[in-house]
Image (cartoon, rainbow, N blue to C red; front, side, top):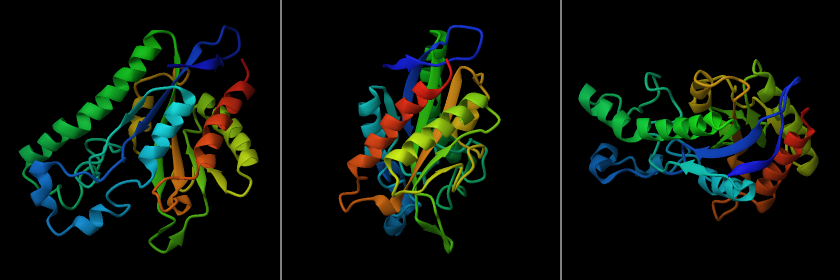
Length: 250
């Protein structure tokens, strides 16, 4: 569904905005015919290495609040990482990268290509109808990695070279920080928005004025025992995004 409100550039009527939410690491499911690959690795699958805990409920919550579609995947990224390019060295894990070439290609064909192609088609269809697409890729991150404690609680990842992404994330982050003053809101931390991912690939396919690809990252330390983030996180993210959109020049 198209979001209420528009924004555009100088000199012309702004195109209507269409929102799209995706979740590439929503689960740690292993397909039945691949379970033999992970014998003895059940504990690893359940950690942040196998998925993004809390990401799927958050993605669905955001889509509900923003009244927009959500595309989510629940196959573990240790089988194949849907947020990596097909030739990225870490698109396959230590459990799958040594498989015969034909089997590696089959994993990409069955799980990697369909998700990315579907998202690209979603974007393309909206752009062709004159929409400016704002794509939110929802992810979570571990509070500490390799001894480094992450300072961010909620982060927005974008390409600073794309003016609309930069402006939207600046306005969004300001509004988000005002709503969640007890949390650390950051931009392009703990990852860079230009690192390899689904959004960076889609930027090569769609013009900066037609497609804004933003990754939403939330620290897993905020997860409740239920495996979900507090309601205030989803509410603030959605409300601050809409406020950020309204604050942009028309």
